[in-house]
Image (tube, rainbow, N blue to C red):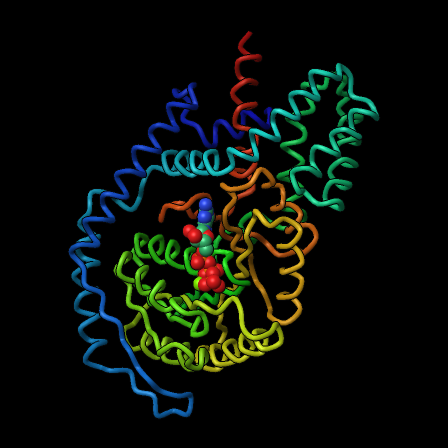
Length: 415
Ligand SMILES: Nc1nc2c(ncn2[C@@H]2O[C@H](COP(=O)(O)OP(=O)(O)OP(=O)(O)O)[C@@H](O)[C@H]2O)c(=O)[nH]1
Ligand SMILES: [Mg+2]
């Protein structure tokens, strides 16, 4: 079966030929989500467990507050469980809305990328060496990364020969297929996708990354997502360095109805995380998400601090942290790549949270990250709304890049 057709079957309802109508549906539903959030927000009061303690063991989580939190959460969870959506939502609908989000979030990249590819295909009737040279430039201009581009071009050349493709129009589809294949490489799709979950207790996610990349925002979005999945979430305000950082996380806590464990500004981040773990355990939380600072006096300090935080987590919960998510801003291109190298050298990064894909025409960076750093992209930020965070999936990503062409392909094949 044609690859475009496969993607269409996977992400678009068969009766819906017009992709724009699916976009409208998704926008309507996200408006509804926003309204829902607002109403939840006004009903909830988030308790913030504020403790001033150290790592020496005298730390006490205020039991009373924790109990109060539990009561509120139970009520809240029940109200969510009674909500109109049943958990076993229709997979097609779910995937369709994910596809719509990827389509919307990747609009800038797609517009630039597909117009260049269409232009190329229009100028070259036959697939020759010059065609590949220009294609190479198009891919590099989308930040795919030199090594990844070389590999794709080589694969494409072989595939074109193997299938005896002469017409440049057919190459579009082969490109999309190769991008997905290249992303997964020898790994299984299921191995790379989604966040690791601790089945035997508290799951801990640690967010790291330089300042301004979107750590706190992504934590807020993730807390909301996990909560909607029925998980009990706690946040730990590990950025004690930047003025206003704790308050920013607290706002997310209030917005999503999730408790935030904090100390005061200038405190020891490892102590905050320690308290966060204690509080999360005592309220029987499923997930603890830890925020950290993006900047300190210098890089060495920051890395030492992160190592200390990680050691505390490892000591308190065996097997944790279950993900160390390096947050990267997609709009910073090669800068993001060098940040990744720095962090990967001192922390065991398990995945990338790639933010602001909606703000760049260079979304090809996903492939550069995967190819050059060999770290999977686990989460993608596709916009500023709380619902604009998705688990990364290479098929949905490629669908987002080629959505217009997939539409066109159907029209051509119907002729
Ligand atoms: N358009 C868009 N903006 C985003 C996305 N993710 C984060 N942002 C914006 O990026 C800005 C910085 O986000 P923060 O979450 O404060 O970044 P941070 O990494 O916590 O920064 P520090 O706390 O200074 O280390 C905010 O204005 C966010 O709204 C995204 O996916 N798309
Ligand atoms: Mg922050």
